[in-house]
Length: 445
Image (tube, rainbow, N blue to C red; front, side):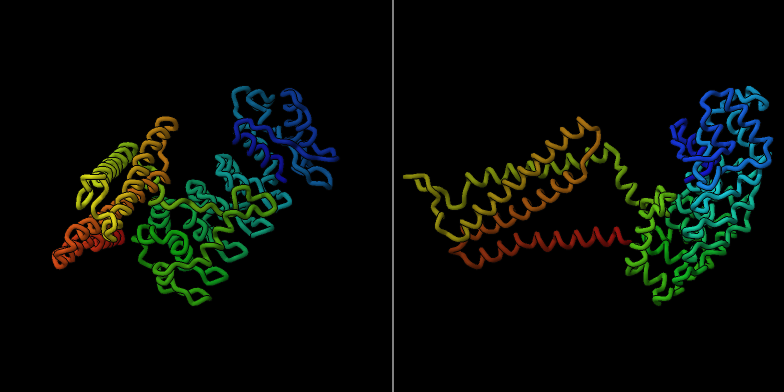
């Protein structure tokens, strides 16, 4: 349930999206205004609301949502306000006359500022200009202030505006002991966090503050975004990485080994809607920027990668097909069968060559399918790219085994030469492992 001003803000922010007003009785000024559809009558109701000292956002004992269409229906034609004034001006005029409305709470303990902060609405500026003390009001369920809500949803600009209007609220904590920086480190981007910590001494002073479980904002960042930890914390000299929580886990330990318990707890918060007031979750976990960059691969790079994979897969398919009809040992002239068909090594060659043929053709087919999908959707399918990559790797491994088996079948009379040739061929796997380890080490560095 939201108040009249709160509902009006939400409706305006959604650019006219209709909201339903629920009520079962009462005779408040705002309810009567909401029931009148035409602008002329609404203007009269607004004037009455401004002049009526006993007017309230809630009507009767049921405290249902009121005035859902009051502000949005005013437009610029409200008598007494001026034909050229916007809804913003109407709201400011209303709040100047009824300042107490800013602090009025609904059944969740949310004020209009709570809603504006949570949804990142520009209305919050008009509210803060009238009364900043409402920023100290905490809601009923989680004791969250407007600053907590704005930080939890990643609204960095709103956080900055709130702190500039009422810097005293920065130290307030919710029912779990989280200050606004705990929330910000989960939901803000790297650039936003660095800007906040570099330019706001109040935020920096909270970097080592513990919550009820002993977790500092550093613990939260290390648990949720470990890969970006040092990018955020480079300029913070007073950050204490050796601080331990009540489970005796330090920030350094989390960075090295992770801390799934805290991460899962925060993920649950991102899905917790409370009694409906946290429609987007208590907190919004931003996507890691390295993953975001990975998802934003340019079409040119994707085409180049796909073309390289396709060339390799087609080459392996060609070689496997040719090897199947140019078999080691040759054919019998009388019936055309393979001379070495009973040789175990030759049999291994045929099986491995068939596997290489199937996997390489599967990779080629996958690339063909991807080209059709890209043409239709103008986007690429990452799962298909991974599948084609796996098919190509497996076909390469099968080709190496086919080469080793075929060579051994032909050189079996000269056992020493056969073994040396096989070892040289199998060295491919050692080289492949070494190359993969080098690439992994380079990414870690």
